[in-house]
Image (cartoon, rainbow, N blue to C red):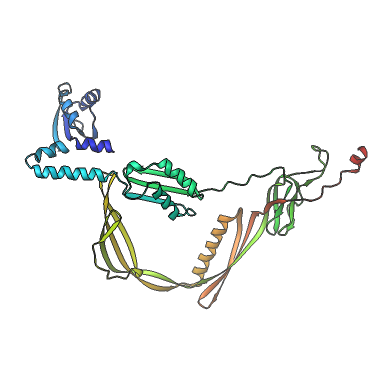
Length: 407
């Protein structure tokens, strides 16, 4: 982008090419390493393109081989601007000074966006950024993203993935929360599976240990479903300890009781609107208004911030802020019990489905109005995984008498 901006400052020419074979013109330009951009085909015999002033002079020497004619339809850049201002030296000097100031201003960080995931302390993150030289007004030459990344990892243990992106003189810092390392499962530990809630077993998928229940069995919370004590088998030849693993699906019942108000507050626009402006210079805000005729507590507030820039990436330490306030009136709205109860029941079922390791097979709810509210009683029939691992010290079964006699 900077190279493109500097090329534009050195002078650009917009040309229109006409001829029976504009493709020959493009081939000649390519062979002569003439850079063209923003090329637009107008019709079969005409196209328009932009090129630098230096390439334009080089192209003039090649036009005899193209069979096309070139017309200049636009000029821009410092050479043309300076030619018009050659007689106005004071104005030219002021423009040069302004250009120098703009170049100097773009060597500093004027936009810093920090996106910290929930769980990452934003205040501590900004403090680390400031200590490592990343803050609004900092010199870009002193920014070292590797040093900052290491400092965040050291000072903020909650930080996980860290992304620091620099575009021009704007910096964006994104920090995700660290994902805890799952505990390593000791496959040699003697564990069993116990029921985490009551239900009726529907199916078992046991990959370790000895199943103690079968489909159709009713179990309570804490019932041992799979034991670590395995009787003698063909593979082992004697009782042994195992690591109980697998999934045990059961039919369960979930219930909830909710009390929901029938009256809620809705906000309606009154049509009154007020617009305020402010100017931000660096970290200082200058309000261009005196007070407000609409109380902020009853309004929608829309903020639009326009940052002054040179091109699309070199930002200046100045911005215009436009704040729009739209007045709203609080209006109480009373809904019927069926609407409120159905919405509350559906929301509870959606949350249950998102957290359930299984499926909801059926659900029903009842409604009862009382004192301006509706009481919702919900019952959901589910099929879910109810097994959880825990240490199991069940005694090993005695070996068969035949095996004892052989010993």
